[in-house]
Amino acid sequence: PVNAACVGGLDFVLDMAGEAFGGAGSCSISLVVIPGFDVAYNIEADVDGDDVNGNIGVNVLFFDLPLGFEGGFVDEETIEAGFEGGLLGINMSGMIDAHRVSLYVDPPNPFE
Image (cartoon, one colour):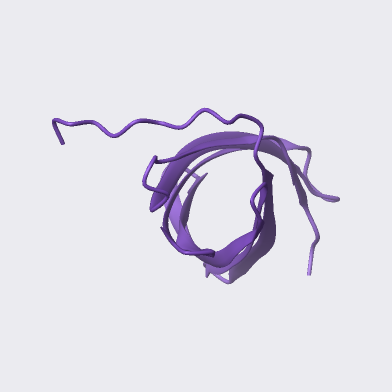
């Protein structure tokens, strides 16, 4: 296995009902044998109590590779989750460790 680190921030918004969140981000992946390259991703999840389950769409070679994840709130300020998936024999796995940075909530759209 080759270990890589994805260094970058993830911005996501939790809806006012506390039932869903989504967001996007990007990071730079560094491998021992390949110079660093940038990867974009988006995230969507459903929240049920303290449990969080969803998908991360990692943009790899011009298409999104879906990676399922599951985890939950460990306290009011922190979400931790793990993900795993693969493509063409390359397996990817990792952890999400997200911390609240704002008390602002995204109000629902009354027209949806």
